Length: 147
Image (tube, rainbow, N blue to C red):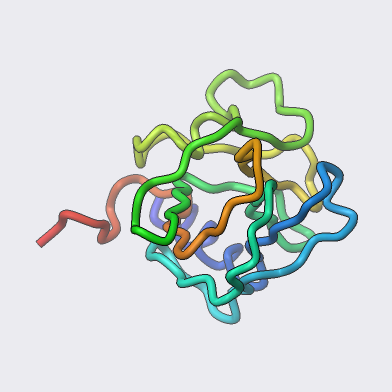
């Protein structure tokens, strides 16, 4: 299982966080792009523009897998909205909601093998200051709260 978790971390390289005003992401702006692989952490968003739709998108040629996503506003408050994304796999253990359920052992896994993504519709333009993430894992990596 360690190899699977490492592979998931490698998939984070070149993945992106994007924001947009349009539901179809046709005017998407990349607010952060991963240049190296990672397991978990958070990134600060320097773009202060308010966007309604925000997403994590995985690079070609991988299926999108992400265990946790959290969006935080200017006052470091956790932001909530409606979970969005392309059609889900039929596997009930891979749904979009698992990206936001705070359980590191549940995972969103996209149906498309390429350009899979999961995101949040905040229902109104919203400024995101920080995005926290965790890749698919067996809970054998370091995460917030560990010592």
